[in-house]
Image (tube, rainbow, N blue to C red; front, side):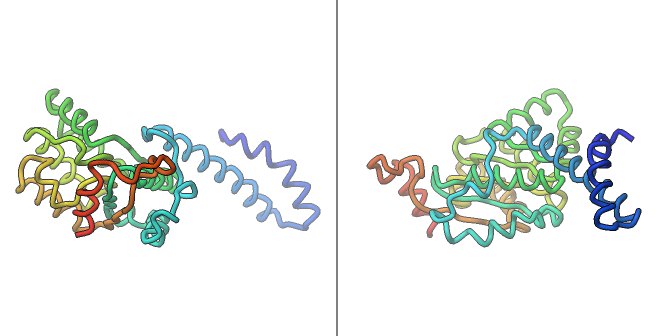
Length: 246
C-alpha cells in the first residue's frame, strides 16, 4: 500500500484502542488518519519547495503592529477561500513595508491547503514568457501555468517593460482571468502602471481584469529595513506613499 506510517502507528494505536475500548472501525479510522495527515504534510513541504520562494515566510512572522489596518483582510485570505473563487490579491505600498513577505506567506498557506504555487518577480515572469514565445510554445506555457492554483508576481513597477514584454504579461493575466488566482505586489498605485507597461490602454485592460475579482490591500509607512538606523524614508517613498494615499 506504500503507507509506511500505518506500520509506525499500528502497534501504538492498538494498545491505545484496547485500553480505551475502541471499535475496530475506530481503530482503523485512527490508523488511516495518521497516514493521510503525514501525506498531506509531506505534500505541503514539496509544494513549498517547488514554489520558488526567495525565503520561507509565514503570517505568524509578520509584524501586523506596523500594518494594523490589513490584519483582518489577511486573516481572511489565509483560509484560502480566494483561491477556490479564482480571486486575486494585490498588495500596494512603498518598499520595505512587507509586501513580499505577505505574498510569500499567502503562497505558503496556499501550498498547505493543497494548491500548487509559483513565485517569481515580474521581470522573471516576462523572461519566462519571452523564452516560451521565442520557442513558439507560449500557448502551451500559458496552459501549463493555468494548472497552478496560485501564481505570485512580485515587484510590479520596479522596472519598466518594453511593449512586447508588456503584451506577454497581459497574456498571462488574461489567461488566468476567472480561472486561477494571482497575487501581485507593487510599489506603485494603479495610476502609475501605464508608465511601467508603456501603454495606458494595455495597463487599463490589465488592471480591469486583475481587480474585477480581487482584494486590494494598501500597506503604509517607512521601510522596516530602516528602523533603528536614524533614517525616516527613502527618496522614492514619499511620492509613492502619497500617491497610494490619494
